[in-house]
Image (cartoon, rainbow, N blue to C red; front, top):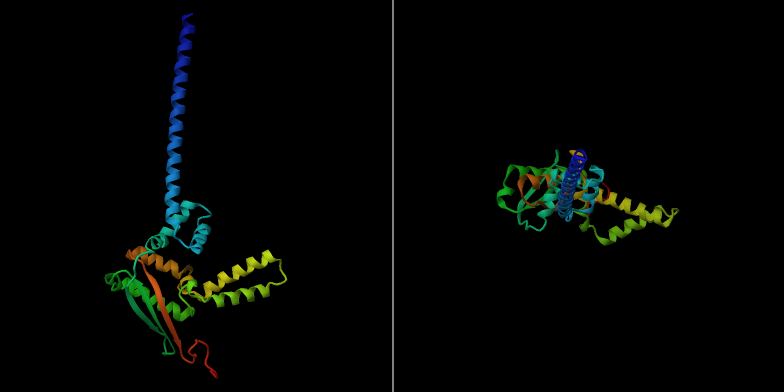
Length: 238
């Protein structure tokens, strides 16, 4: 009888220990859920102001992993640049680039938040890089918001006509895809950097935002090439 009583006692103690372990596991699981939720909230907050194109690039690089996407954006300064998007940029520098022989020249205004940063060698180097990019890649504007609505509509019509034999849903995808390529070709911010085609000018700016700690943006530029007319096309007879 005593042996049986001892066995029952040990069984009860084992059940108590099991309940304790189960409770600990539940608390641990709950704590991980809370941490995951906080991490998710933090990640979403950082991604909230990042552009659609940047998010798509981050998603591809991170294979759909949200936290890896945030890390990828942080490494390139894009997330920090988005955080500083509301800052006033009234300082900066006007830079230039004259190609050998004097037949091609660029003037560009790049803005930052303070005169102190504007005078740093890093910022001046960036301005020079942007001027050289404009000379080499011949963009038509700074960002897609600068493209006139009538130009966008004209491009849409051209792409739709080129794909007229396709189903309507397919035509829409083709048009949007070609329009994105059009932006990448003519918009300075979306162009591939001539020194590293795997990075865009927006990526480059983001890296300098992270490095210098200020919002940086390209405000305007003008590109001159000998023989061009005032609208940027080759002059008659050239």
